[in-house]
Image 1 (cartoon, one colour):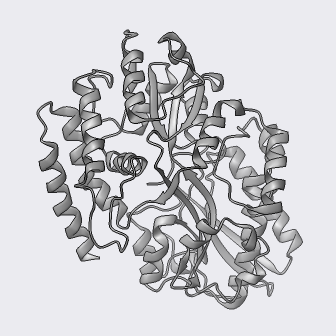
Image 2 (cartoon, helix red, strand yellow; image 1 turned 30 degrees about the horizontal axis):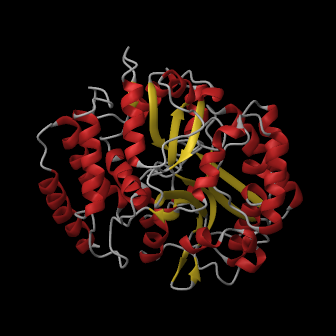
Image 3 (cartoon, one colour; image 1 turned 90 degrees about the vertical axis):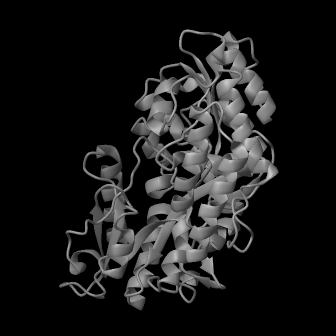
Length: 449
């Protein structure tokens, strides 16, 4: 799954529609009428996201001014990458020259031979050596580089400090284990008046996504190291479902309404009726800007369990049809737009602050060394959110294993949705049988490749 927000207030994701012709999306042509190198790019914020759209346009204009030999044609729409059309666009030659991908797409795009090999060109990407190695590795397949990471996220626990205080809990001591979370959730739910201690997703593949995060947090893995066998029918997998079942039926700390998706849970948290749920940091501005929450009430802790956390994110790849000149132009554009500390669409924190967008959320660090130092310096200087509320998350993440989503994630999540929804809606759910059935289905998915 993707994370559910952008660095600012809008989920800035766009995609070129299949209604476009091939020439409108991926050009495969070095030049335009003026003899410039022309590149098409996607993930431009739509016009409805006025602030982000303005920033994106400003940054393209400044790039073209600095590089008068390059013409950038940006495409927008919603979302950046629609799973229903992504493969069709690739196969039909309709993909932009420089195109957005989730981390989980990298190997697939390479496997179907639709990605340009960037290995000979990355020395021209000024920022490449400053990027976190584990993020670079996501786009490296068999020793060759096929993409450039742009953002990352890791899962944590968002909690309501005000409800913690009302329940007699220390708002500066979030639960570090699942047993502690269960105990805290029970106390919060006991406040009554429709208050829910802990909520979780269980529909639209989101239940499977969170099952995976919870499995990682307890030291488990969804699939074997070679990606060929499922590993959910294990003590860790059993513990995930048993914990959810017990909180729902024994503790009554999860509320009676189930089959929730992200919007339902965000609405609960924003209205002050929810104590805790799992999420990435970018949920916080959504809770404030769209759901009525308050930055001062919302804090972030690391994943309970202390073993691991799910990470995700996105980056850009380049079309197989792109010419060497277009590849070089695309890498220059990525440097300018996203990969210069303290500048560009993602890094101009001063500009974001002036637009009343949140600055200081604890996104996983993209850079290392001096680049990271500069990025953090500029961010700190422009922070406009209560950064102390997120320090536990930052500290705790230092000791967690960072684990990416599994191959065929969406198909697997769909299967696991059934197991999660069963334990939350059926008091007599057979956890052993649910895991056995899920394992058989997921092994079939993995076997089909």
